[in-house]
Amino acid sequence: MSNKLFVGNLSFNTTENDLQDAFAAHGTVTETNLMMDRMSGRPRGFGFITMSTAEEAQKAIAALNGAQLDGRALTVNIAKPREERAPGGGGGGRREYGGGGAGRRERY
Image 1 (cartoon, helix red, strand yellow):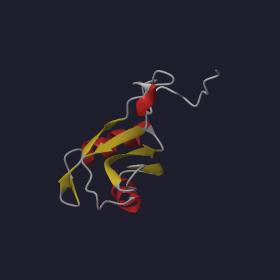
Image 2 (spheres, rainbow, N blue to C red; image 1 turned 180 degrees about the vertical axis):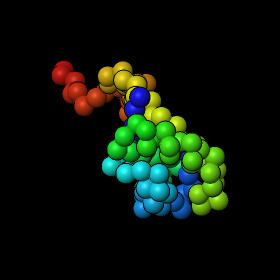
Image 3 (cartoon, helix red, strand yellow; image 1 turned 45 degrees about the horizontal axis):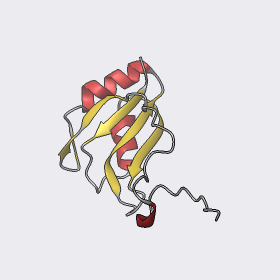
Image 4 (cartoon, one colour; image 1 turned 120 degrees about the vertical axis):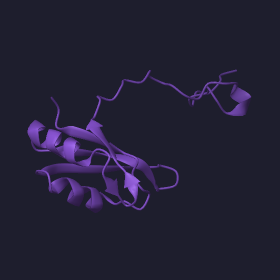
């Protein structure tokens, strides 16, 4: 069993320190990662917490799943491994609309 937890349904006002404090009451937190939107720099409403042991992770799930933090009911469960994405995804479309070129130059 893993000791990395997914934490969802976070308020946009929740900080990494808020998460750290909430989970530290149930064990040793080794890492806190609040996911941020690349474009706006605002929180995305979820993050990840790594506890020092799987037992502490289970205690935190039992105590905090459904608990209120900043007025929101948290969703806490074991984090699933990130799925591999297909290489070179995105872009596409017709060249004249800015997609699919991938920086290649045409030779005439």
